[in-house]
Length: 260
Length: 305
Image 1 (cartoon, rainbow over the protein chains, first blue to last red):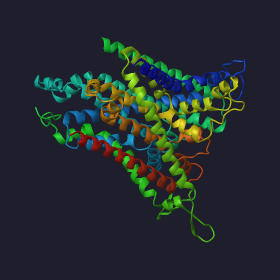
Image 2: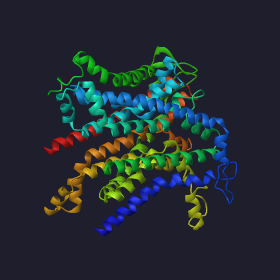
Image 3: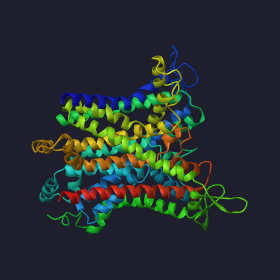
Image 4: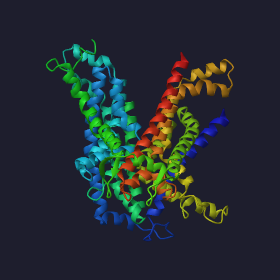
């Protein structure tokens, strides 16, 4: 048995390394003192981090991405909350079909979603606008928010809602005073997932945005196309560190809440 | 209390209240997902306008041009396998990536799920950090590792194992590795949660009944794990087959996949109907795989009875 678990450690370790190594390997590239993408040979420099701040294009893209992520994640969470509550409370006869419909964007290859959304936005003249990108992001994030909230609802005790009703709560009181507070972690997870997914969305965004609206991933993509300059390594490092911090903090919070 | 009695408000008719909750999300998906897919279907049968867009004449040109090339001079059709090869390559690359992810993930997920709580969390964070990092960044990061002057080649040359940098990037190998790297967490996590719920007493019972390790694995573990395996496979296969970033960045444009071909139709080639037709084919391929796997999951249920 010992031999087997040692194999397990090796394999899991190798996978951990495989997944993390590239993210770490970018770091030295971002500190090169040269103008082109290269490993630093003795000379380290922060100039490419400075370049991110100096060029307002990067900052503007960060702003655009943040705006789109905040708005689209709020919309997606509201839609998903209403839908999941509807399925849970009303248990409509077509629950499975309706849920399948809302989860559709998960099973459609992202590039297909991108093309269809492109056609629609072209029809209604929203191609390359903030509103258009928000629509695209809401569509691709809603299913994940729905799954998160449905998971939370399924863990909740149905009798809580029934008790509230018996004690005279009307449906709205029951929803806002009993159900929603009980699934608040699920709601937070749903919002968080939508926020991060929108912040990083590239497959749909690359199709539907362009000159006027440039999200951060789109800016990186363009940069990669034009000239592979070390700024892209710098922004990658910054974003990876940010993501890692958020994930670790969130994990801590969840753990402390689970213990409390 | 029945579900009907729990309808939202006595003042509004129940049906209207139902719509208030369920309606918005369904409307969004219908308007911005289903309707666009219908538009895409229609567009795939239209004539391409010269600078993007469509002309409203019915034609199957878009589909036939996947297989045949129209001669400019005498308008005759000749068979060209170029696009077919790209479609086949997409299926193979995605299938291979899914299979390899499966092979790597089963023991890993099993190992993580059987750790004590604290270690489990550390492993999960290790797997989830890349899962949350931007796909574009991860693909670029992998390119940095595989490059001629990247760390792998540097280490191998340092130790004198190779004298020339290995051609690790800009080929099919890099693309496949990129797909695995991109979507591996999507396989590990569902498998982990399946193992987490796995009742290990079943395994003990199997051993007590003199099942060998191999038989216990194939007859007990795999069937119970099947939903997790299928979910993981879909989560890897679907984004892989339509993958756009990995072939473009890691394949260096030489090993195109169907996603890149579709992308080109909206950038340089400006052929919307052809892009729509390719997307329809991609969608059909995906649905076929989905149905096949769903049927296998269904069969499993009836076997159990």
